[in-house]
Amino acid sequence: MYTLGIDIGSASSKVVVLADGQQIVAKKVIPVGTGTSGPQRAFECALHEAGLTSENIARQVVTGYGRMTYAGADEQISEITCHARGVHFLMPKARTIIDIGGQDAKAISIDELGLVVNFVMNEKCAAGTGRFLEVMARVLECDVQDLEKLSAKADQPVLVSSTCTVFAESEVISHLAAGQNRQNIAAGIHQSVARRVLSLARRVGLLPEVVMTGGVALNQGVVLAMAEELKMAVGVAPFPQITGAIGAALLAYEKASRS
Image (tube, rainbow, N blue to C red):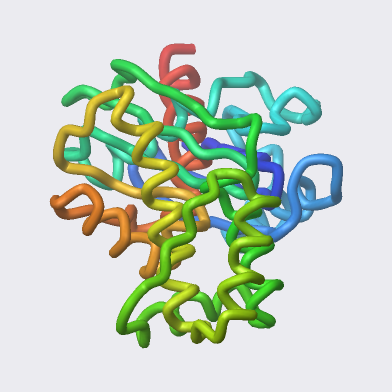
């Protein structure tokens, strides 16, 4: 039995196809999200990769920021629930999930069954999100993917104390004008993200294992800053961008199996 999960975010669209609720047979990430052609393109590419058609899919579940705009799924489920199930599938020992997306950040506490115990979200400010990093990269005149390389060469990270993206941008410009090198500023930016998100995460409790998901988890500079701030190990899910889609496909399988 094949099931499919669709996670429509603000910045990207993700699709996963599962076989019998156990094997990932296709996965696709398209770097545009809700309100674009991204969800449909991701859907079509994943089916093509799996060698399937929509008729082969027993059930589809959609999740994420843009789930209410997608008409093709059998059910809409909160991204909190889907991320919890997806991470549990990949890393059963995880108890705390820190998910940083394009425009929001969330912390989720889960139990040994992958069920949500508590969660908190930051969705009203871009600070501590992928968008924040994009703005900072533009100021440093580099690609957002290069922030990790820059911070790895830092010897004394500078303090970026503003929690507002606009004020932090001005602060980084001031650091550049004062002659600070880009490597130390990049490291300071990563520390700023870590402090901002962990202040959120501490509200749900931070039990090991702590696992990061979302596109920002691909930036090792942020992961290391998180671990340093927490004074504990921070893992990264094997497929950090698609954990929500995996969870959606798993929940689709569970419902289809009972039908």
